[in-house]
Image (cartoon, rainbow, N blue to C red):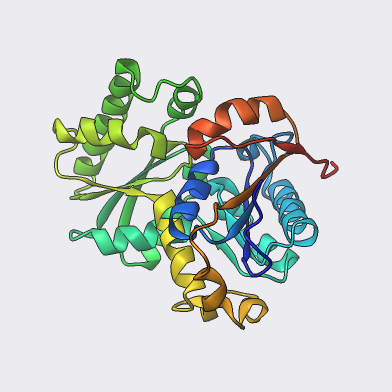
Length: 298
């Protein structure tokens, strides 16, 4: 671990597992001078099978760990389920700005779409929450969501460039396109509503390039979240987030620090640190290093 310096802002990143490392990867690309603390609540996943109240409690505990124990001054919730069902609870639990992954994805879709019709692929839990549909509707978009439950295990198996995975993606997109046509929609944008899916983006774009569905622009919500975080640290939209006064001084100078130093990253997990270390580098696109085990209670 390399220390960037006392002036580097600390960004906490939270996920129920390790898929959110794709968000961390995008954040590092946009904010390389920051310090990062990533927590995967691997002991209590999947969040999607839990009640909203339980998800809110788990997410709040994780947020408090990052803020109180790791000194995070800004939180990115790199978990679609927690962003959909517990964002308010997290904001109430910590005195720092909090950014989820759903609003940035919807914002990027609004900027990309000309027809105003958007497709969203995600996990069952995220689709059933209809959080993306609501966020897109707030931006004047019509969104059609589809659960793609086979994609996460295929990613974790490492089949991100496999013909089987390509065929699964093609079938899902064909079904989604047919449903959109039946509803009279003319979609031109596809939002990847799961943090595992950025690893499938090249394969998804390859399927689209072969005409299923034709002419669709892909929105990577991990990259969209990193871009919004960059703007927030640049103070362009910072006042809109709760807790903004915590970072109201010297923020621009701290983010614009010395690019010669490697980014400092610390990773924590509540269980299965060996699996985290083994698979995490695939999501982060660099070694995750030694993952530290933490106990957040029940």
